[in-house]
Amino acid sequence: MNKIKIIIRREYLTRVRKKSFLVMTILGPLLITSLWLVPFFLAQTSDSQSRIIVVDETGNKEPKTEPLFKNKLKSNEEAKIEYMEDIAKAQALLREGSCEAVLEIVSANDMPPIKSFWFFGDSEPSLSAQHDVENQLTALFKDHYLKYNCGVTEEDIAFINNPKVNFYSKNILTGKDSYKEIKTGLGAIAGFLIYFFIFIFGSQIIRSVSEEKMSRIVEVLVSSIKPVQLLLGKLIGVALVGLTQFMLWIVLTFAVIMGIQSAAPDLFSAPQKENITLNEQVISVDKVQQIDAAPTSQIIQGLFSINYGLIIVMFLFYFIAGYFLYASLYGAVGSLIDIDTDGQQFTLPITIPMILAIVCLPMVMNNPSGPVAFWLSIIPFTSPIIMMVRIPFGVPIWEVCLSMGLMLLAIWGSIWLAAKIYRTAILLYGKKITYKEIWKWLKYRN
Image 1 (cartoon, rainbow, N blue to C red):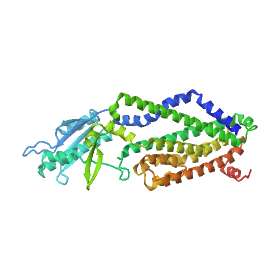
Image 2 (cartoon, rainbow, N blue to C red):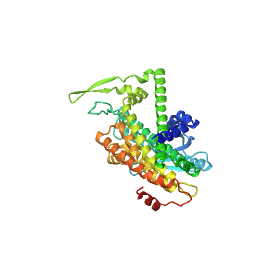
Image 3 (cartoon, rainbow, N blue to C red):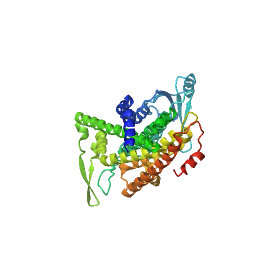
Image 4 (spheres, one colour):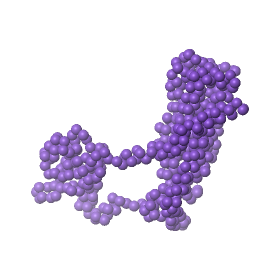
């Protein structure tokens, strides 16, 4: 046991004292946040504004009437709308490259009685700009039809286009508001954190084991300690590094929250309530007007409505369990790698379940209680990621216990499997290792 403690202490201090550990502890949350925010801001940023010329030919000559869409299509950040009356001149400008698209609108005898033609040259405008113009055309035609063919007033048309329905989402058992969007985002972040932790620290195990093998340092180590003890020491030492970094992240996060709360206390104020009588029962809900006026406050209140104690406990369990499940297998793969061995053939089968869990995240977030979410949260190789997505929504206790029990069994099996492989492969050099050879090692009794 003392020898294992020495290995744990060596692995832990070696990594914690590195500058990269301090850098990642500080920059890690920023990098993870940027993975979510940067694509969002890039999606909101338009590269350039496309010039689109509209030729509206829906008006009548005899008797003369104004075209239906003239000066009604609005410009935006992606499309600058201009109007012309001659389609030939507009297309000539398009061929010269003076504009990106020409939209010709004509009357037709069939239904619907309006048709539009979209002409473009070498560079077609963005798909979002095209959809925006199409949506504007549809809305304008609908308003015109309701007003002149159905006799609907301007006020009624405005109400039809912007109906307001107060939608409340409450748990009938607890009486708490849903905040599903916030729970979805929090669950996705927790799942990605588990994925990154397992991948990063599992890769450290592979690198550490393979470097010691190729430098022949392991020959000196196994002369005074059993190979299995060496493997366990590495697994526990690197796990403590991950836990240390996670705890520091929690401290930094709470420090940032406290700073924001001191600077803007109004954001953390409780939302005003109103009572609604429904089926002779009084239901307390947040005021919709306040939610509309202060969406940031709603987000913060939603974040504070979540049971973070449960999430942190579950995160620690699934991080530790998922880490030991995968890191033990990564350690076995590290012992198989030397100069003449391609380790990718062994690492790919291990990483496929994690990739599958990431690919299935949208389905799980859309329906966290569905069959896909249930089975992926029960299977040990995908449950660390998927279960963390489901936890904020509430998971039946028997499902959590079943998932945790299967995880513990899978960890025992993976460590047993890794120990069998590690014990034989760590001192094996210059031999091409196949799955058939590994199967023989697993059948050895000693």
